[in-house]
Image 1 (cartoon, rainbow, N blue to C red):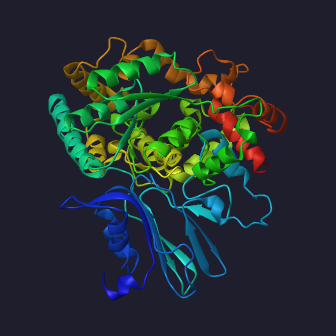
Image 2 (cartoon, helix red, strand yellow; image 1 turned 120 degrees about the vertical axis):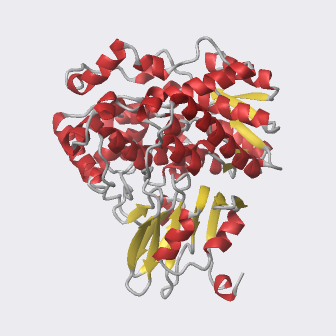
Image 3 (tube, rainbow, N blue to C red; image 1 turned 180 degrees about the vertical axis):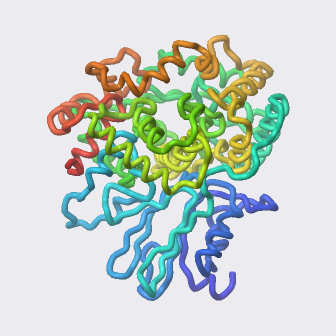
Length: 527
């Protein structure tokens, strides 16, 4: 470390591989790597050479006369927030830490509340506080002390530029296998010498990671969590683990002693939820009990969340987006009905939300089709917030997290394949089916999104969805659904549910919607 580096404080988290040598950098090495930053161009150059899950900021509370830098990885699996006051910048990993003790109720705009309550996160660099900002995926900031201004550096557009790959379907399958193998070798370098925790379900993503661990000789502690042990997911995960020779654990998602007040009366849980949100995302409570228990037993472990294969698989590409050309006004409105959202929108709210979507589209790189536009939104907005929530549930208890599916090379290769190979996760499903059959962990009832996409009834439903959303009658809340494997019906009932019914002036249509509604009510963010 040179003299200039030693004069700067800095803080990095996570792991990254440095191109082109694929040298692994841990948090300490990343701190040294960024310590001698000079300007925005230097920041962009250094960040572009990294592949991994990481973040860096030069100082939490920058002195009056010193520039500051902060940056997150290309999919923002680590979160950073900042606030500028009196010519100085404060940076940390949680927006709540940037609030003052005597700060009045958060003056959130109607637009941010609408976006947050529908999607479950705030757009772009927004949070639910107008003066606190989150660094978007693939971005960094350079705070200039002389002017007190911010220069945002986007080093990764979240769009996979370059010529589409002209390969046959068989060649694409081989390419996926080879690229996934390389990503697994990077994962191996990160995991070597550390305990490994793998949340294992009956799904494809965590099963593929389990198979990769078996092939590289790493034995993880596999775990499945839910409301009760007597459900399909637990039995199937246990069978997969036994076939691969891995130990398996079950954890109940309902904390001991919970009554009708649910988590609204538990200060430890509230602190956990605030950490996950950071003022920018909704709450996901499923990992709480599991992460707390495993962190006590394996405090140095790395967790491999397996529910993030969608980013390479190509799932959730709405047929209208897939087939349509880029028409921002039309696509902005269609986006309002993607996956139903978390609340029931009124006609005037659809118009306002579509306007917000169109404003975001205007900031995106020029792309030709609606499919491209939607994948940009998914890679800049939906998935990064999901990664943050998924990883922070474990990191709150001091555990490290690695997400092999967001390996940068793997993402770039998969997104450059012909779209017809990815619609409905076709290629991803067919390759994994082959791998699972070879390993003896395939099942006749494995869910196939691609087969579902081929059903005329499913395709018709997708085409009609934007038209029938206004016609639907009151939708029963999921609290009353018989299918409740994670126990949300118990976690989000009692005092929480009654508070939402009393104080929130819109109807939630999902379990997440109920959680977001409570958050807005608790923090007085309603208009």
